[in-house]
Image (cartoon, rainbow over all chains, first blue to last red; front, side, top):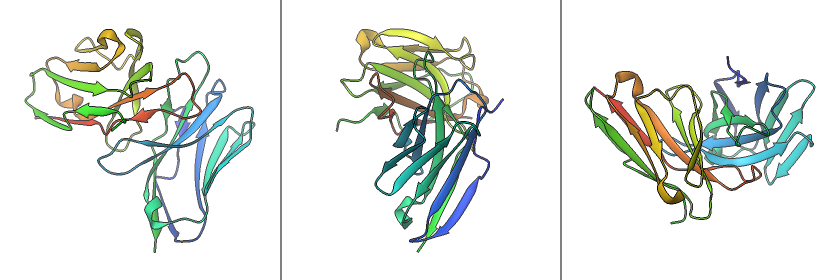
Length: 113
Length: 114
């Protein structure tokens, strides 16, 4: 049972444009959400997080939006840069879970120059 | 280097052999996690330590898997009698008591069982 779903295995955008990566979840107990970026042969790197008490969190070029009623979150990257090309994982956690993360399968983002 | 270190980076072993991986977390992090990632999947939780206590183990962790974190510092993950299905990337991560900053993952140990 996939509790965190990233339905787009890949996404290709032009440099300078906006990248939007989507994530859906089914477990209503999740109350904290994170995005990680992963390059080949490296471990995932934390990008940005959001608590369920917020609907938006912004950090530089990265913004995460949370729609609790739809159980949906998205990561916006503006403007996209070729160095952003990587696999992006959405992850979720909830209180009482020992901060254990449940990950989606990832979306491969390619930013073309 | 103050990141999470994992050793070895790659391990090729014959089916039936035992293997052990090591993880050195960020020194001030009290939480340590092991995850496993297979091709096309996201990382899956295996086990969690708070200081030296192993507080949770996934059902994915069969009896052939054991993990330790002596003295709450480095951790080891041992797989006994390896099987081809154990081939995966084994990721270690550490964190503080806050998810605001996420985990810090190591680069992983790639295990290939032949």
